[in-house]
Length: 80
Image (cartoon, rainbow, N blue to C red):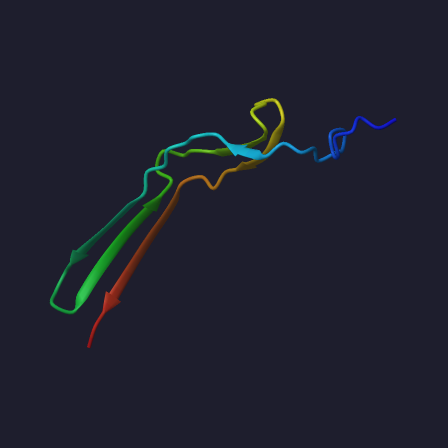
């Protein structure tokens, strides 16, 4: 039986993927210890947000969930 709409009843459907609005806070700071030596502190996703994608506008039809957690990085540089 054909409905006349291609893909209407397919597994993947014809709905676009929609990403739920989220906010994420990142931080990058540095400190100059001496003329040639510098330290850096970076923090990513400090608000510990998850990102959700849905099929269409149906929040029950979750397509993907991304979760990286909080990430911290410390680094140093020295110039000659």
